[in-house]
Amino acid sequence: MTKHTDHFYRYLREWFTVFLPHQRAASPHTIIAFRDAWNLLLRYVADTRQIPLEQMTFEVFDRELVAEFLDHMTATRGWSATTRNQRLACIRSFFRYAASAEPTLAMHLAAITAIPQKKDPANTTIRYLTTGAITTLLATPDPLTKTGLRDQFFMILMYDLAARDAEMLTLTVGAIDTRRRTAELIGKGAKPRRLPITAETAEHYRRYTGALHPGSDPGEPLFYTTHRHRKTPMSDDNVARFLRQYATAAHQINAEVPERIHPHMLRHSRAMHLYQAGMPLEMLTEWLGHADPETTLIYAHADTEMKRKALAKITIDIGTDATPIPIWRDRQDIIQRLCGLAS
Figure (cartoon, rainbow, N blue to C red):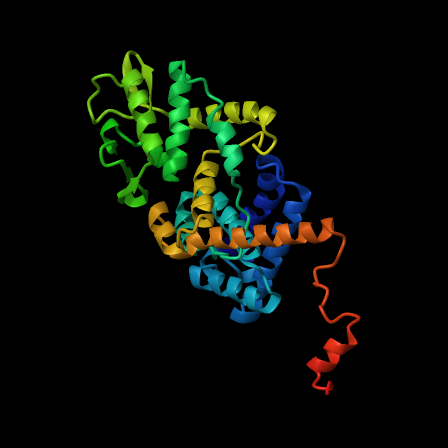
C-alpha cells in the first residue's frame, strides 16, 4: 500500500470508527447503510477502472466517476431519487470530513459537492395547513398588544403572499403599497417580484404600521426588534419561536393545527390553497418565485395524492372495495344487449 493510498484509507477508517459513531452520533443502522454504499462504490471503481482496492487514492474519486456510479446504480438497482441523494450525501460527508482534517483535500470535496442532487417530482411529502387551521392560527395572537399585533400581521402577510421566511424579514415599510394593494418581495438571487395582497391584508398593514411604525422611514425594516433603542430586522429564530408558541395554543382549540409548525408551512399552505382554487401551475410558479417550474409540480402531486387518500378513506368507510359495482350485475338482459345477443 502506497503512502497516498494509506492516506485515503486512514481517513476512511477514522470516518467510520470515530467521526460517525462518536462525533456525529450516527445510529448503527446509518453506519451500516454508509458502509454498504462505500462497498458498492469501491467495487464499482475496481470493476470499471481496473484499479485494485489497495491502490485507490483521493484522486481516483473525481466528479465524473462518482456521478457515473450514482447513475449506474440508479439504472441497475432501481435507486429512487431519494436513495440516490442519500448515497451522494454519504460520499460528500466523508470528503467533508477529510477536507476539514486536511485542507489540501478541499479540492476533492469541491468536485463531489458540484454533483447535483436528483429531483423527484413524484415526492408528495409536503406539510400544509387546512384553511380552517390557518384561520384558527391567525386568530391566536392578541392584537391588543404590540407583540401580538406584530406577530399576527406577520403570519397574515406571509400566508397572503406565500412568501419565504427570508423574503418576509427583508421587507421594508415602503414595500407595501396599500393603494395598489401590492407587495414588493426580494427573492432568491436578489430577484424582485410584485404580488397582490387582499383588501383585508392592506387594512391589517395600516393598523400595524400605525401602531409600530408611526412616521417611519419607508426604508426601515417592516418587522423588527429593538436593540439599544435601534430597530433591527427580526431574526428567523424569533419567527420560529412565536410560530411554535401560537401553534401550541391553536392546537388546543382546533386539532387540525399541528402542535409544531415551521414558517415554510405557511408558504406551502397558501400555495396549496391557491392551486386547489384553480390557479394554473405556470402562474403559481411565478407567484412563488421558483426558478425551475418543476419545483412547483410538488403541489400538483401532493393534491393528487390527497384526493387518492380521500377516495381510499371513503372506500373503507362504506365497506366496499375500490371497484364500483357494475350496473349489469344480476341483470341478464343488460349483459345480452352489451354482447349483441338480444333480439
